Amino acid sequence: MEFLIYIGVALSIAGIVVLVYAMAQAFRLKKQTLTNTEFTARMQHLGILNLGAIAVSTLGLMMVVIGVML
Image (tube, rainbow, N blue to C red; front, top):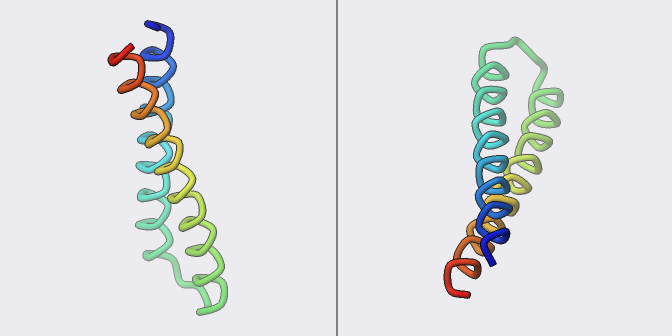
């Protein structure tokens, strides 16, 4: 079940990369001068992106654990 470990690591790294991207976008967004509604809409989009990245990273870590146990 070695392939599960490699796929899990790839998913975890992809999730972490997207998390870093979302954080960088949030810092850039704070520096911009936007209206309150534009700021809220973009932050909500980043929140969804953040949750998706955490879910992908979690699934990757679960695959690694299962691969190691098998």
